[in-house]
Length: 350
Image (cartoon, rainbow, N blue to C red; front, top):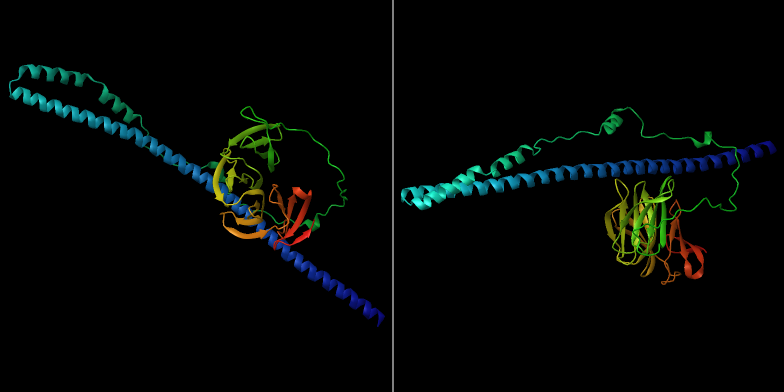
């Protein structure tokens, strides 16, 4: 009986672990599906930008050539009109035996025949490129022709390290990067900073109304983009795209580093917005009119609004979202604290 009890207990524990493992497997599967979907979205976004650039280039070539052709057409119309007027005047002067006027018209006709205007327009038309074609990116074509997998599923349970990770007890300074540029009109006030990749940071210079792309490798400002108002905080959305809050304009500006640092679109939120974070395809933004967190999708639709009754309306807050999106962490400058809040607005810890 005792051995049966022990075996029953062991079987119950294994069953409990198995159920827990099933939950974990389902959770991991959800994360894998999410990661695959996000990767596909990043690829789609990059291809959309590349397609947009190619289409814009084609439109620009068409517009420039049409402009040249229209100039040639206008010039030819003027020349044709002038010649017809001369012909008419010559016929009239000859018929009416107006020898003086006929002599003047003949001299004008000689001058017209000696003119290089028509030859110049002919040359212009000959040098206008009338034949275009689209040449595929050979690297992309080769990439898509290869038989390859979208990615692989890594079994981390088979690669568990025996190394014990030591808890961090202090941070060690690794250096400084001066982000002041020659075009700055005042001292820098960096209110937002985010890591784009291993070698690049993007920073919000509030006082100078600029976004700056910084190389951590070369320790210098690589590129900057002037805005029409002061930026505050930054949330990275993909490897080359990020969102910036503009409190005074009550808007969020989505920017890209693809090709060059530029604005993609603006999302109006009609509230003074400060701290921002991006998680699971949603933007989480702390606003102060009234104090709340608004949750938006990437198209700018407001999905949820979470009131923050504890937050002072006089201090600019920041936000961080836990990976599972169950808790929000809000900085409260007036109380020198960080507050954990549920998605329902309930304070869980301070």
